[in-house]
Length: 394
Image (cartoon, rainbow, N blue to C red; front, top):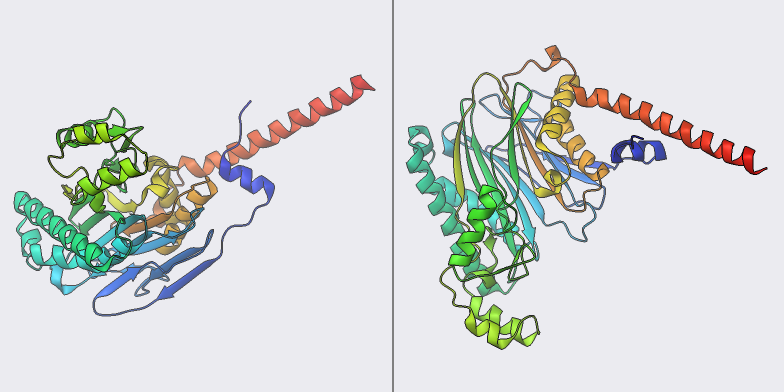
């Protein structure tokens, strides 16, 4: 007997989708970022230029973004879209997923872009197309931003144990650079097929990235318990998180005092490096004529929706109305409908190479009709069973 999906289950129960609130602005350096929203409330920021509610760049790339607090008590995600003359035709977008407070995200929203722009020499390094130079510049930028963040957290004392992942893209019509730290994800749609461009930096699992992270942590003198570094944090690369970088000895002592481990165990730990690092994976992706759009999102989306489903969902929305902002909000709502328990932050870049109205509807929407039919059949069988039970018991 087929069971209906979570989103169809909500439809059958007659639940109502969230409210939406948007804030639209326009400046020379165009930036879109989070407006803090409540549970079940999407907040967004977009710029209308030649589309109803989508931010459009000089190169023809159209942008949308959405943030949703979900079931969490606090909103610790954020996203930024920046189009500036500094990057020589490239646009910048980033998604940040904070933990132990919002302070690290607040710092990185502005500082990480500045560090990247300086390291890339105003876009000259990007335009030079020498990938090793690009990789070196971005790694230096990320590590410099992290060093400044650690200093700021210690001096300010504001949520000193906070941290944040960061996944950044630099994109123009023919090329995209991805610089990635943490467990957010970038997916590229090419002719309707999803290409996942990043791997989650988490210290558990048998995939290549996880095994590399586990080995790095162990070689640095750290340990992993139940898929978490020191039994604490589940992401192995992030900004901030000073207790796994500059304050490891203090963290070990505090753990003994709190009874989390014994003094004998702590005495055996010999730190040899950072257990959590802000050194990014950097990728260069050529964008051919079949490249349609990019979805950059925090794990609050990807833990509940796989890349293929996300691409089909966004593609069908763009085919219907061509509005990237509406597609971003709808994708965030879909994650909520699938019972995402995390903050959700999404950025979508329509690369401007696709005639959306000419595309056929993909299978995902047809599956909703199939699921509805299956649900009706299930309800009919249940009703028949109840009727039979009543008949024979009377």
